[in-house]
Image 1 (cartoon, rainbow, N blue to C red):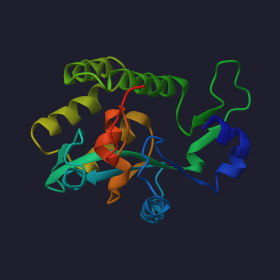
Image 2 (image 1 turned 90 degrees about the vertical axis):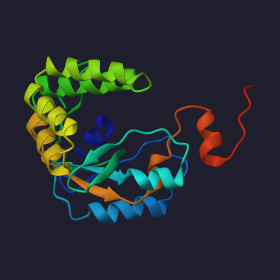
Image 3 (image 1 turned 180 degrees about the vertical axis):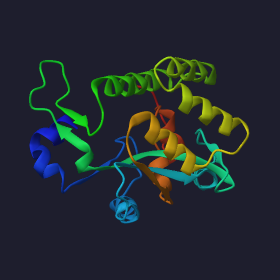
Length: 211
């Protein structure tokens, strides 16, 4: 984001739509990318997230470990894919950033919101390979950082199986001051991410040998 903001500047970003794709998805092709671009083309939100039906992943990669949640509006379980589309107008270049400061920000975000989200992302990265117990601790941590209402509503909806993507987007927008949207992906390849060496054997059929 810093490099994009610095290269294009505010005037250049206004005309751009930015697609963020994980680097650890070796099965993704240009066709998969273009399919999502076509689906996101009519979205005017600040950020558009992708989700995919859990049964698609289970059918294609039966041994893949992933997390999904039940969505009442689809009457099925869905998993998030780490593909994002960002409206360039949402990004702001910060040329006066000092050493160690970010050279970009998001429209409507102050430094407190930006730091809260950054700390949340760092916590997810630190805990993503640990047990669900630690993820619950992460939710408790969020409760102390200004997300109380949104996390409470999210957990209640989740517990009573009435969470919908519409509600999830509302909570995201309310907590982080942005207009969020979603698209339903059919591109299973984006869910074939590599976290451990053994994942190569599962996804690509390659026998892994250390050394």
